[in-house]
Image 1 (tube, helix red, strand yellow):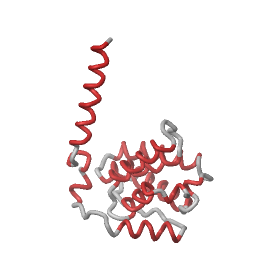
Image 2 (cartoon, helix red, strand yellow):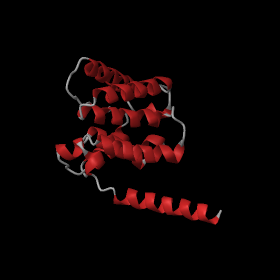
Image 3 (spheres, one colour):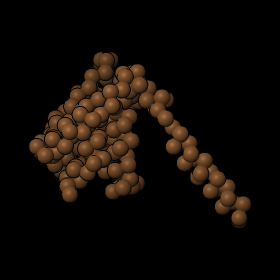
Image 4 (spheres, helix red, strand yellow):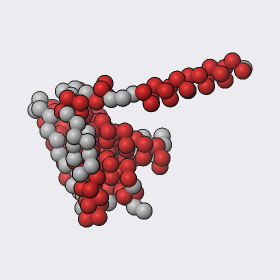
Length: 172
């Protein structure tokens, strides 16, 4: 299977192009990145993650954070322009819009979304099908998702990890 046909990449493109849930873009692609290239901070997937993070910050009017992270995304894209992870993505469009977003941020323009253009018909169809099933979250929720989402599973995992490390230290 081509790596861009992975369900998590399809989810990423669907969230990015569909309901613009950039927070969820980050979540799904980080999971994919950890599966295939954990720790590789220059992997193309990291650039995609940073792109979504930058868009999230820009929409929240955190211009400084958005600029910083979009520059990082652009650098990773540039380093990996011939990667298989851009094979079915219009790389020039992606790179140019990342660059345009940076320039608009520098000039104080309000948030402006863009689409990731896919060049493979099968991938386009898979993303379009997934987009039809996306939740219709409110703008307020998408804007503040990091504070409004259900974090109970994260808190449970942290508590289990804390207990595990405490149990280990008690045995020593």
